[in-house]
Image (cartoon, rainbow, N blue to C red):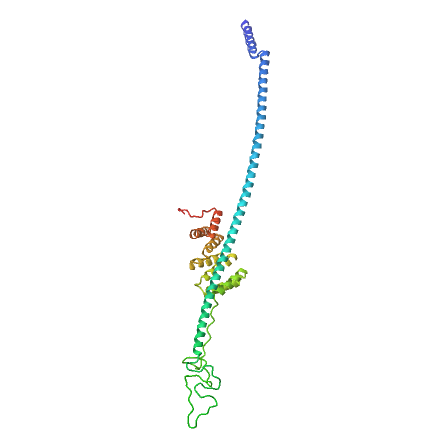
Length: 342
């Protein structure tokens, strides 16, 4: 009994001691809680300040980003306007170069026309001189032979006695010299061994083609007046009648211009090739290179067009057409001169 009660008491004492150990003093608990609350409050304040600082920095960053975006937009607009201005200037320069080129071509055509007219005048003068020589020769043949009495009155014979003088009876009248003209025998219509001989009928000569300058000028006037079907026919006549004349090369060039303006780029390329291959000294060679390159690019043959531009620059580096070819190559982003490894 005693041992059992002692055991119960011992257990109760251990439980009380354990309870005493598990329950801290009230003062210590309150102090730790206050410190913990203070630390939590400080942490919350720090987090709030950090959040406020981050918000301010984010606002500044947003402003900077917005300013950068505005600057980029302004720069983009400036670049676009500058690009448009450069494109407009390039088109204006190209148009002026085209205008100068066309004026130069018109001047060359005028010079060619003047040369052709001078040649025609020279031929006309030679023909007039030949006619004058023929007239002089005919006049010399029509002059009376030596010994005849010039200016004799009609009804008298230079070899016979004066009119009204009778011949003695029994004497024959003098015989007129057959080699001298008389008043009763007119001059023959033609002189020479076949005088007064019947002229054999000769067939009329075949109609010759008009002079090349006349055909070419008519075709050029119709071309300038935009009468293209008629101009095509007349340029074709120049080429058919005078294939070796330099104006035939000009005719091929203008046929190419007509085909190019009509959108027939393949036909225009063939016309320009006629000028380049058959008339190597023709003044239309540079502009034929230039317009052939344009036609090639129009039918999507870009490499061939670039090669044609470069050939023009290489053959005629100081010509207005070469300057125009350089401008067009720069606009395409291509170097005017071919690289060694190309």
